[in-house]
Amino acid sequence: MENPLGFAHFLAHTDAVARVVLVLMLIASIGTWYLIVTKGIQGLRMKRRSNAFLAAFWEAPNLEAVAARIRENGTTEPFSHLVHHGFTAIEQQNRHAGGNGRTALVNAGAPEELLTRALKRAIDEDKAHLEFGQTFLATVASAAPFVGLFGTVWGIYHALIAIGMSGQGTLDKVAGPVGEALIMTGIGLAVAIPAAVAYNHFARANRNTLSQLNSFAYDVFAFLATGVKTSPMLTDARATSEKVIAMARAQGVSAGDARVPGHPGIAVR
Image (tube, rainbow, N blue to C red; front, side):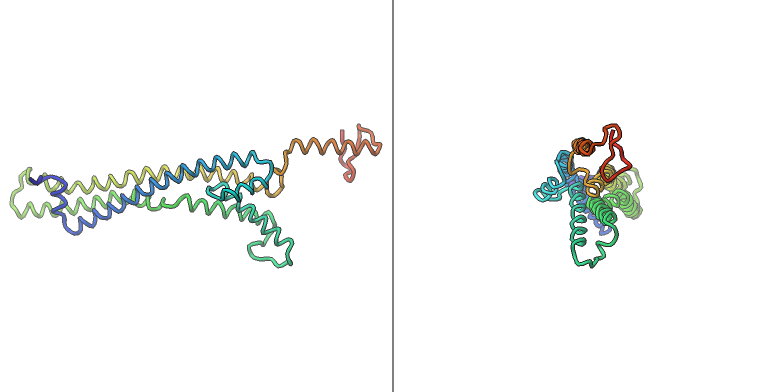
């Protein structure tokens, strides 16, 4: 026996407009949960790979080891992608410096400017990749309640017309059709709430990732522009200091006021 107040009865008595609204809600819900699942899995994988790359980057003996890791594993997350763009900019600059002097538009400017543009371009590409699907989630979160409300208004309108034509205005005759029409509002909220929660979660995760990526870009710029990371700084500083002192003593200069060869203004004490 068919329930006169059930959802099946509601579907059986909907018109074309109400069915279009239901189809739109179904598409929005499927798209929302697809993005929630796929972006959630991708976010977990990206975080794990980023942590592994950053740990390997800071423990690498030099930039050549980092380049070898990128060639081996590829650029599967934003931080390795940023370093890859930095290496590409340096290679382009080296080819231009050893070429025939013809400057392409991509190589215009000083080497530091070329490197800065490359790192910024990498960050913009990563930002676009991270924000994939965010517009859809925001649209569903903001529009789904109003689409459901439109379906409710449309359903109540037709329910009241049917009640008026039947001439029976008692509560038991009004509650059923009006209650069925309110199902549209409930469907709209059920679609909009997961989309709003997912959008806020992914937006916060993206802001954190981009903040870390911008901070990391400063380090990458310093390492590629100055070559600081090519060797341990403390060891190099100690070795350089010992060589300078030895050269000064070999020339018979007193240790109390030794002058660095080639730099008469610098004294070694």
